[in-house]
Length: 213
Image (tube, rainbow, N blue to C red; front, side, top):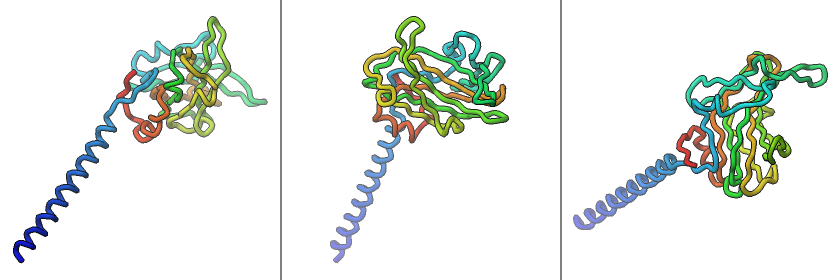
């Protein structure tokens, strides 16, 4: 009888140990997945050099750039913002651009994160990509935003599906802000070209800063 009880207790203890080990391994694997670097075909984390790396010519239509904190590039509608009209309604827009060479067969997904959109009146943002063809020649706009640009968040834009671009391409990236009054702004956090398989991972952990070229 005592031997039977001892054997039962031994099996129960072993089951607890096995379950605990499995849980520990699962937790550890989850942590490893979280800290594993994200591989990008090209990326800009918009750190302190971003205000110099992103430009626009001519001066008219150029966004006022500032860095309110590390890893944030603020695009503001300043004196150089371009006035335009939709019917009788006036609005302002401003932009900045940077060129990149990307293997779109491997890294077709453009991920752009916007942290904040703010203005006294209606303010919005969007992103545009053009294939660079040399000189002053660029391909058609490939663009995207979230909720008509009124919402911050993480935008994914597949250039092979939306723009039909394939292979290794030199492209122009444009970050934009627009609104009904000067002084409005949008805060961008990063620009990354990633593999499709990493989309869900980045959606789950958009704050991830571990990125490898």
